[in-house]
Image (cartoon, rainbow, N blue to C red; front, side, top):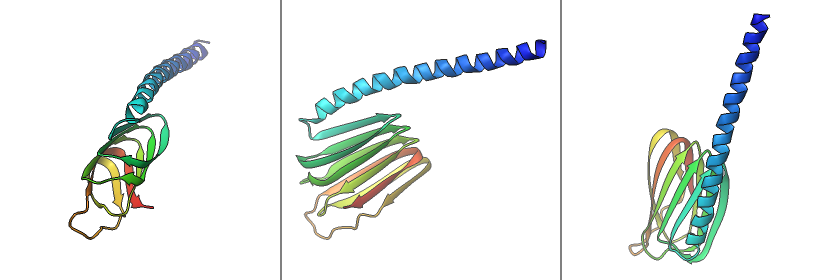
Length: 155
């Protein structure tokens, strides 16, 4: 009987621990969702855009808007950003922070794209062909990735 009691206690302890972990994750998710909503409001009138995903994903198309800087933070989530119709008249920076997450970026015609990345268990694929010309703005993409990836391409 003590063997069954011991097993029951282990299972109960595991379930309680898992429940507490899920409760903490849910609380963190609610907090990040509130921060993301506030960030979206700030993005509306700004040339500097920030996107935060925690246990979620997002797909954003930035059209007919001038953009200078984009920051993307993914924690167990993903982001698709379509800048193919954005106004990029000067050099711009895109900073990406992925932890178990991925990012897809679509860049417009008429810009150079330079990309660098670091981290562990990661990859970055830049298939946007280079544009010719001297007075073309450059999009600088810097990614910090742990167990994730970044894809850069043109539409």
